[in-house]
Length: 350
Image (cartoon, helix red, strand yellow):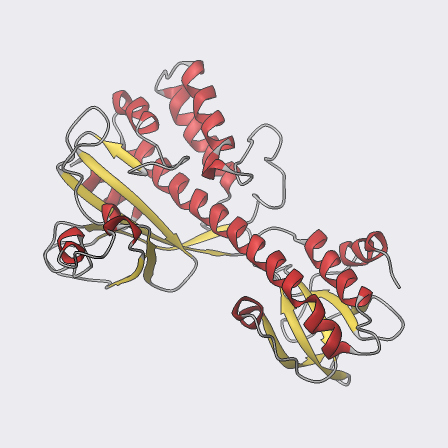
């Protein structure tokens, strides 16, 4: 059986597909059952050659598909493709999955081996998804901060940075004056977002920070990984832009260092970004292209979502436990939402 180190080396040497429909599959063992490749975007794929597998886990079911794999114009085979998430280079996780399958004798009995390894595969994919969500969330918040710093008067830049609280668990991602801002980022085609509680869709009557919240905006950002060039950006590039604007505005170095520390603590877990040591890390250098930036005024009665008073009518429901997904329309009318990064920044400043 191939070792983890051998499999990792094999994956590291797998080239990116030159043609979206053709794969240069590298088999882990001579049995040609477990193989690895990269798609045209550089994402790692694990191929399990054999009959269609039936995952019991919804997480694994979403990540696997049974398909015909073309190695060139004349050679093809049927396999189950397990696709790693789009962001970063998850070579180690793919190597771990391959090794676990082979340890369970996938070469001679793929279906039983897959069944035995599925709980481990599910945990690995779920962990990658959480990491991916954190990276996309950070990219979205930095995109808005960059737009705000560019559109702000030089005297307002420090307030923008000081108002960012999305790096930790807090009532608002951003607070500028009496305006509270929730930033929701997706790689999907529309403004579909998970709401962590009714406090994210209604004004905080108790006030945010030192002042009173008079306006709540939900800024919906659509991003998708893309090839370099054009209007793409990376997380390190956004950080450099923000720091550059802070320096022009005369923000003290201590506050710049505080901003960098908050980045490293983003999400309260292992997903923070250390600009000093990780600026060239493939996990953070994925180029993004902006699909849309929309700012929704959540006081608009045309936005029909669950709010505190809706839940309070049900005496036996804990309001703080309610979580749900919203699907916000592209237009509501009367200037809501505001569309475009610069236009949203201008609207925030009033």
